[in-house]
Length: 545
Image (cartoon, rainbow, N blue to C red):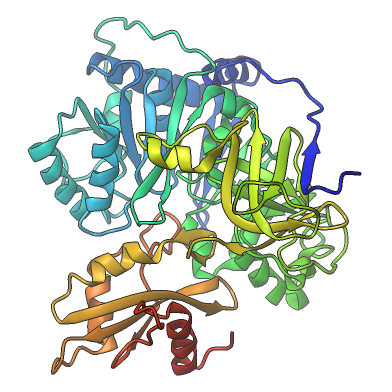
């Protein structure tokens, strides 16, 4: 065994050289009546799509987009909460040869969506106004930016809305008579199909392209009927991971799980659908564990998958009660699934930060600040390499060059070491990042918006401990001299700027805590002591770190 911090797990199955569209076509031909998508509400609503319906409706919308002038390689923005219509729209964009750009609303003025769409030079928008038109105000603001600054060929709303009658909507498009036959483009496995967005260290979005090849050879696939309510726009919730591979997916609204009030109602949905597996956040596992004494039903999942935030011993209490086995994974938007712990068949002890060994087809190594590989048990930066790994950041050559090392190794930004059992042990992030639930939040993106409020002289956003979500967002601010701006005032300002409950994950970037400082602690070099700010905030809020 090598003394160096290097691990590799061989891939046991050959790579598929196919497009997503080929796989979907095979799926629809072999299993036309199979329910591939099942939406459930906790009050009993059940809506489904079969393989045939998904392919047919996506093909219809794809033809519409091509008639509107969308060409192979064009970018189309897709925004909205999880829905059957969302998946139809995503597949249609891919069928048309275009590239899906995920643009979730986080700010109420829609500038975040416009910024991503303008960088990507989107030629079309497919947007969900929401079940109760909750996104209409943001869409109208976005529309103003588009009219003034962008040339958009297609604008389609995924549901009907009385406020947006000047544009086509998906139900209408699906009932249109075919005008003329359209020629669909030839697609290849190396063609890009999606741009995932994730926060950058400066608060500016990073966009990560993925291809047909990445999608059809993804190791994140769960077999059997799977419950997963993670946002479709996130890598961990993406349809290309399950649905387009022929695996049925059950989902509720993402906000329901993040609220934490209807845990057993969601579990009842999982039971009624007879799911064999589920992808659930660690905070949901905590909610389940809190209910274990009152749960006496014999139903259990075959496997429960989790990750996205630190997993602790408490989370394993679900084994033997709610699931036969527990699988803990470590993933990122750039690389998708990286490693897994051995499957837990009983409640057990987890070393903090232990994320197991690389999945098949994945290599990892630990390097020092000069790029040299370290020995076992030495902390350094975790680097990753695979055939389906990270290739580039869209339109960001300098950042791509910063994170790609010779040999196509991707620098993860995570500090880690490899222990004597050849497990990866994560120790933290090189750059500041708040981990609320499974959403990673860059403090500067929130700070920049709060500084727009008149009278705010300085603001530091920190993560403070939260038993359920791991961290919560805390705004620490200083006002201009003589001004009285209360924490309630700042909260009200933020409610007008950030999407919270209506965000695709039900959390968004809306802060929870607001603490006023008369002055912020400083370091000897003149910079703000963010660590001391966090300590002081925790003390004022009377939280336990």
